[in-house]
Length: 250
Image (cartoon, rainbow, N blue to C red; front, side, top):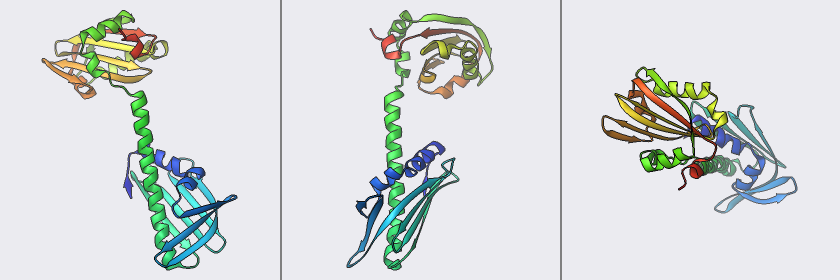
């Protein structure tokens, strides 16, 4: 049993639903014979081998994946399921040498699940490193912000009244109402009030940086602290058609 969040559970089960992934990572695989695979189960001096056809099926919502291995003399069924935020597996075996093979089939299911979890985590880290650069520290530098603004245009300025905890919602409402995400690849938002100041960066709809100064204390990348900035706020929004790296380049 493995605990995961909903997104990673779907990623893991999506991998396990791919027949080529199963073949590439199948424990005890000793050969591929046409459309079939040959498995060899071995423990000490005892062994059992069979030739299996492989059938992999998933439910439409990827909450369950079933692998069926139909052999010449035996059959194996492995099921991976998402239950209450956890990934579980079950395995059954019918055929000769049951005392030998049954335990190894359970290990096979466990190894497949653990490999898929590792691969899904690796894929998620690759996506994060490729697309989720955090510009929060950059926002604290006036020199960096100035370079960015020189290649941007002011698209909105005004005064808003914000209740405690409502800043992010109001900023998103302004951006959405003016359809700015479709017009500009990068959006910079700054605001000042008696309770503090903040700077935000959005790139392609993603929050790419958060900087706040509240009562003289600086915060980086912490979206939650924005909830403590309330009252009358002077706000400015800038848009840029170029990406962040290009827009802020010296």
